[in-house]
Amino acid sequence: METSKNKGEKSLRRANRILAVQWIYMCEARGMVAGPENFSALCALLDKDPLHFTFAKEIVALLQKNLVEVDALIERFATNWNLSRIALVDLCIIRLGACELLYRNDIPPIVAINEAIELGKIFSGEASKAFINGILDRIKCTLSRSLRTASVSNADYVNQ
Image (cartoon, rainbow, N blue to C red; front, side, top):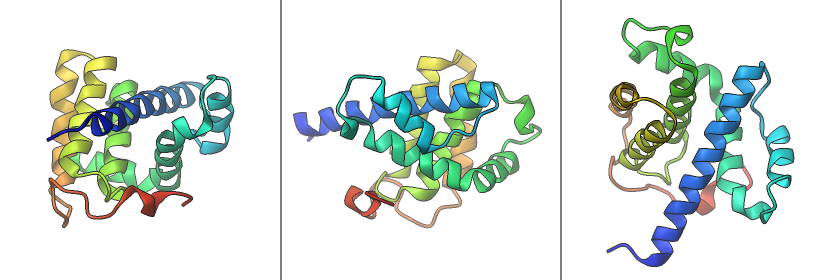
């Protein structure tokens, strides 16, 4: 059963994912590196406790650190597509979802995919949901961990 604490955590994580996608998209569109350093400056402008954006900072840092590997995997599973043909907003969402699948064992893969699909509903067109799901599902199939449960706690990712 989902408690109000779980719902609050889920909505906070969703808000962090939304901000992370917006940040990654803006940086890509401007030819900037979507790193955590500049992201911290953005968070400082948003009149919230800096801890509010912890998850977004973590995922942005993970993506920057592993972007080459993430992009290679996306290209591998985006049959008949290369990165330049994928709509930028969809690419940002897929990168974020792939990063969660590959590097965040505290997030069940099914949750990471569902969250990416929800981001697609917010930022992209109707057809994008299936495209995002298809690529992330193929990446999910390469994982050797449980698809429905987290294998470590969130505390293992703090201050990485």
